[in-house]
Length: 272
Image (cartoon, rainbow, N blue to C red; front, top):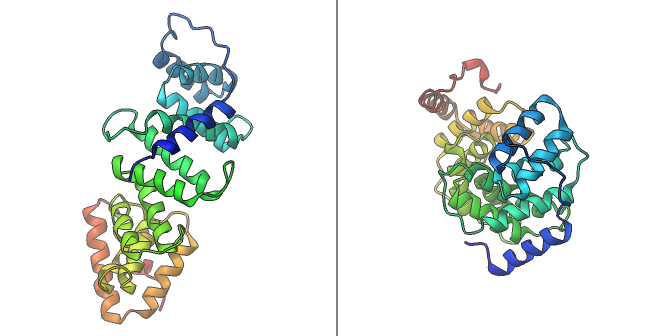
């Protein structure tokens, strides 16, 4: 799946309509390139000098410096040092997406910022803020980031959308595919969804041992105590046999050991 030409034209128009005005920044020999201006602005940002940071980062962003554009978008999206402005953040992320719609590279310096811009814009369309709910647009943006940049967040969101049928029709097989990719990158929500689908046999032949093992791994790596992860884990654990529980626990520890993650202790397993 590729970003359609019509969608790219709309993105460009969106940037023109709601993009931020030009910033006033007077470059010096130390800040006379976009990269230097960004470095200067980022140092100011880290020091808490937001006014200086916005001037320098904004200048670098206007010159096409992708990390500067991304950071500016993040600041407005999260209200980091500035008043939250989703319309402005949307415009900035849309500009990145439009500029990099044909990128297929995973290993260049800008790749993480480009991929995250695709995901951020997809999140806006999925949530319906700024541009209204458009699951097809979100799916297209996530697909690009997941496929061409191997982005775990995009892979997780694709898995969720396919599992929940957010575009109108559910597809458990696609949910398994994308959850598996994100799970291998260490995403606890993806590990939980994959484990649940494997345990239930949705979209794939039922594999209760591997499914429960991935649910154990997800619980071990979930530092936020996600209630959905807890629900899926406890549901599968309650339905498993004693033998399945013991074997899955061992498989989970093997996975955690192979991925340099502290192993589970027996006390980590939920009560029966």
